[in-house]
Amino acid sequence: MIELRGVHKRLGDRQILAGLDLLVPEGLNYVLMGRSGTGKSVTLKHVIGILRPDAGTVIVDDQSVPDLTQRQLAALRRRMGYLFQNGALINWLTVFENVALPLRERRSLPRDEVESRVMEVLGLVGMDHAAAQYPSSISGGMKLRTGLARALVTEPRYVLYDEPNAGLDPIMSEQIHRLIAEVRDRLGVTGLVVTHSRACAFDTGDRIGVLDEGRILAEGTIEEMQESDHEIVRAFLSGGAD
Ligand SMILES: Nc1ncnc2c1ncn2[C@@H]1O[C@H](COP(=O)(O)OP(=O)(O)OP(=O)(O)O)[C@@H](O)[C@H]1O
Ligand SMILES: [Mg+2]
Image (cartoon, rainbow, N blue to C red; front, side, top):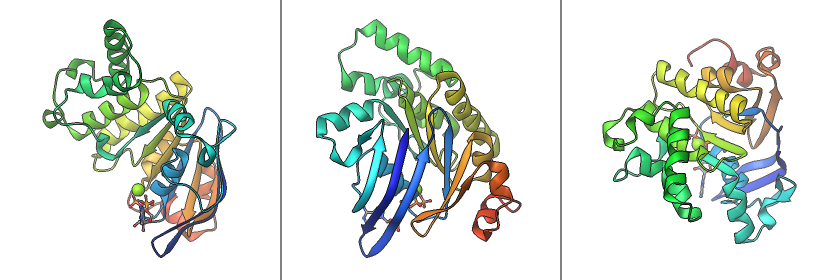
């Protein structure tokens, strides 16, 4: 379980988070929506301990993230995958080597085990046929799927997805969304998905929270949120452009 309680964070001269309460239930995908610059990525950075709250608590697996030592933090990050916008692949490494990276960094696994794990997870995201290709020769959707494979290769309990369909056409977006739902259903991964996209929220989300002015303005199931009285919530979840 991931839980933020009363998190305040000031960056520069702006109060970005102002008493943020957020609970991501085990085994579900929680979708965090909000306008650009509201602090969605900042929220994810608190969960992995890159940023520390000025006040409030961040708890993952009953541990207080800001109080962890570097060593404990490293252990926590091993239980957590992070899908960056655009996949954030390394251009001079093949798809295979990009996905193998977290395994090579973390421990000395036998070569054949690295190979079988990487190929398994590439198979899961439908990228096993492209293992030898370089990022420059694959599409945006393939890059994201590779990024997802890299996030999954260490068998994390949690995956944080930052704008998983940014820059993708609707068909590729749908593929990624389907994969995010599959990762939950087949691997039992708990997900925190940050997005502006209604399609992404609908396809991947179990619960949706809308971040505004540093806190959750409204939260609920998709059906509940579509009936919301808040204008901002409705703007995100009903009608209009995606
Ligand atoms: N390290 C930092 N120092 C100063 N300001 C920061 C820092 N990181 C983020 N900010 C500011 O905090 C605000 C929230 O940033 P954040 O990246 O979380 O937005 P976001 O909701 O993810 O937006 P987007 O949808 O555009 O990705 C922005 O105004 C940003 O400029
Ligand atoms: Mg962001």
